[in-house]
Image (cartoon, rainbow, N blue to C red; front, side, top):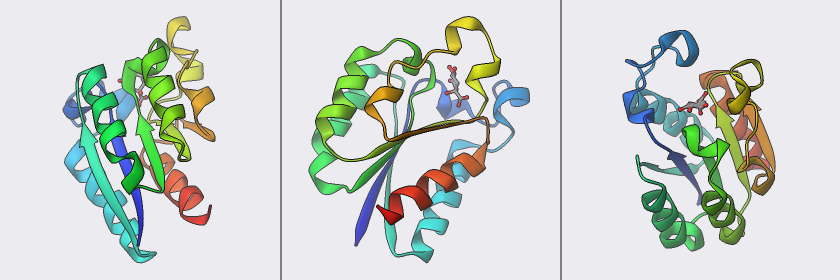
Length: 142
Ligand code: DQA
């Protein structure tokens, strides 16, 4: 059975409450459920994790990378400055897709750059929850 890690960075535990104009009103639990159900249709297992701590995300990736075939990651604000997370994604040696609910290219200047994206096969931004399903379908096929 193919396994895909679904990982969320800082503040994304507050989805459904925070900045709904950017992130919509779906909670993280609901989002994980939707992705898990969609994955089940093609026999893929989702391993979900969220942390507000950079090191927590890196520890999780290091611990689980050998058990998984792909990574869907929304790094939250860490996307804009975490070279450590970039390296952890690269070192995982499995294909990753970076997803952002909002369109980071259309927001504040500091959000327009993602330093983690170059460790990923693909970046999907601004498609809300659809972005995760697109990432899932992409990873299920490779
Ligand atoms: C986000 C965009 C980031 O800039 C922000 O810090 C987030 C959420 C998104 O999903 O659009 O926490 O990753």
